[in-house]
Length: 294
Image 1 (tube, rainbow, N blue to C red):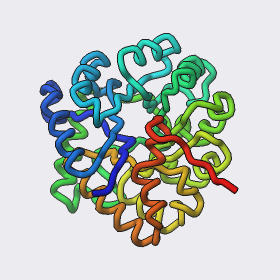
Image 2: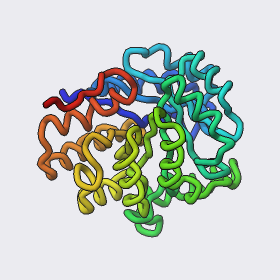
Image 3: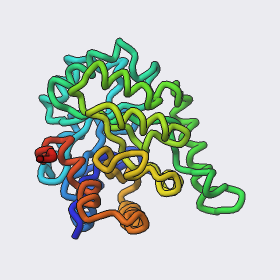
């Protein structure tokens, strides 16, 4: 079975019953992950829809062999001292999304500096924030499941209210600023930079030592990755990591699609091993980086 590092797993949640106990869901996530060959998975914890940091780490500590706790933070509120507290709780990485200001806002540097010091990689969402309904692939007028999702999303929108978010604040170009200011900080841009940002994301990953891109985001982004020669073409193999970023019951489909993609691209066994495991493991210090020899 393929050995996999999944760098982008959201803490499970029952959207129809938000108050449901999360622990049985994580138990099931661990069972699914093991059955699919996921040896390590970064579970994104806390934030707008997550449990408290304390409860999240309590649950994830049941599975130290497979799950790496990653704290979802808002750098408007979480500064360097708070990052250190999260590290002391047991978190080993950070996730940032939907900030009120640009990712490279100097007020956020305290959090980045502490993450660099503590060797905590940061996963940044890139571009437009997705949701439960992809209108490039379906529409409520012709798909009953899409109609059901639409109505559920509208009800949730009423419960949670509007968000102060902007894709411009989450551009991959901001990662260039951060990587230049914090050269030892390990930075992962999600979704290959996201649609409309591929070239910017590829350029940043090309020239900044410690910037990688995850390949999560769904079938449209996967299609673009093949059509636009992003995997191993515009973006070097060593600069890419696997992330599922989907409900736990869909992870197996995500994995199957990537096996097909790697076959289409004719990737070598070494390239596949890097994409499935080694790149992510090196970012998190589980494998030592290798270098060419004369």
